[in-house]
Image (tube, rainbow, N blue to C red; front, side):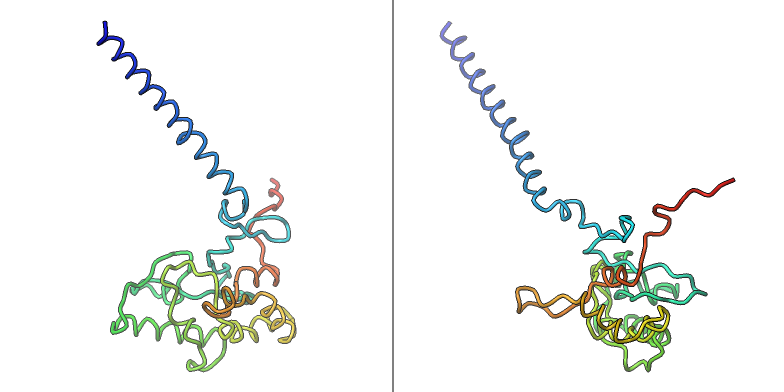
Length: 216
């Protein structure tokens, strides 16, 4: 009898611990984490950025180049490049959304050649001498998702963007200044330009979002 009573007490104690931990770890803790995430719901949902029509065009923290047809004028600013050293020339100015760093060291001949491809492609696009292309345009984002460029790289693109959009270079520089973020905490890092938000100021929209369906 004493054994049965002791056994039941242990079972009851174990059940109480199980119920308590289930309530704390299975209900209260997840609810607390969810509640904290709601303090800044934009961050919890990936910090989406919307265009004037309310359509999501990307995330504040992920750099994605706007898609422009090869035979069309290019009215937007471009992110840093990323891509692997491959035979495919499309990677020479790769899409930052690929999140695919080269994994090549500073002594890599393949990386050196790849940087020269980038230098030539960007210089041709902006109509400048190869020596004028800033370093951050050549050394792509290691993570592949960097949404920022240096003010120097933004300045390099101002003449092209102004000409294609029919704006004065002074007005485009003002837009660049308005979308330039200062150093973190006032002393960490350097000034940087958020390309997505800058392009939104130039009229970037989400392709097909909110478009009326085509008729028969």
